[in-house]
Image 1 (cartoon, rainbow, N blue to C red):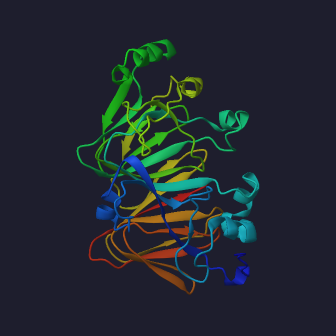
Image 2 (tube, one colour):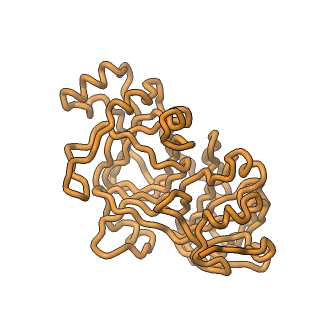
Length: 330
């Protein structure tokens, strides 16, 4: 179907339908904690909330554009949706990917490349920098970088001797913690942790270690040691941040994305127009999002795409406090 809309009829707010990915390390936590309608009998590790990647592309959940894929919206109204500067900078490509992740087992020890490596090796335009906001932690931890004095030779020897765990720095995490992971950072989400993730629009992962685990197809999952060694930044020493303020809090402004958290206990909060598109994911309570005459009721776990230059208001509707995360391009 070919989608055609007059820009006058395209609302500034687009509630999106998530796409789910079954993973060997996934479970049912996104259903339990966020009310996601997961497919029966599947161990779901990822809910792709906002995506323009082929095969996992978002579409509009409700409203006049219901069923329209994100790529079609961009093709028809790219500058109006993404923002003139963002549209030009990325040549009309959607630059971000927003996910919710539920780790019921440890993920592989892994690393992602930067834009230059991805481009040189025909892996796409974008590498992968990402940020995690911890939503739930059952006494969980994350693998976060390499220990001091671990270089390539030490890491390769540890891998060959099956003692890679001795080289990894682990950190306990709690809800509200923030982690920024630049390309080249060795990392892994571990069992019992659920996160919101904003990242560049890329699905490139180089696995370093995967516990001799079998994939969903019953075969050993592929490792990518040569590529990983080419992209690891052995100087990367990321940290965990904890910010516990109410109201609007800027959590992170990196090269490729900006992340804000909003907490409110009553009333509403107005957001002025932004030169970039934004995404809003409700991670606590119930709310109504409004822009002009358009409004949508949101429950915990719902995500909206908000057009550039579109002011909007979030109004609390639940007895409990409302919390949401806003991602955009700086």
